[in-house]
Length: 145
Image (cartoon, rainbow, N blue to C red; front, side, top):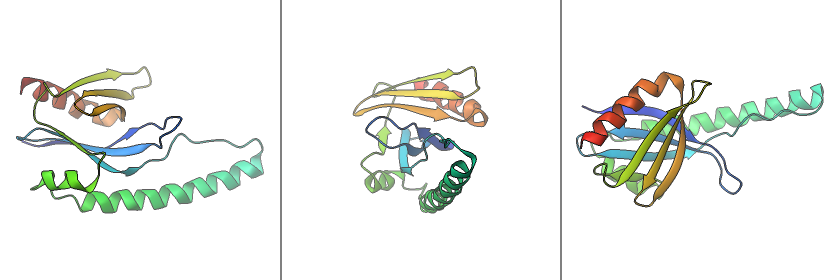
């Protein structure tokens, strides 16, 4: 049985841009598939006119980014996830829980923080509240392997 979290985001850092990932757990293991860039937190301008212009520009950028992510998602071949790893050097595969440590923490806001630490990866991903149950099931099943 395959479990999937469609989109989770690695927040932006000082040097690195925000990134979007798809998480997949199947019979072979745990896949962290890099889909592309993500938008960071919304910014607000100092006055109403500048804020309106800024929000309009951000809106257009978000729409274009969402189209790119949707295209990338539609191209994923779930029958051959190993081939998906070749499409981005930021994608990872973990055969079992000895290769990566997964920890999930739910914040007071309801947002989940999934930490991955292990073989070539150290990430913190934001998990949306509607995906928390799936994230918990992924962690439970993956830790049994």
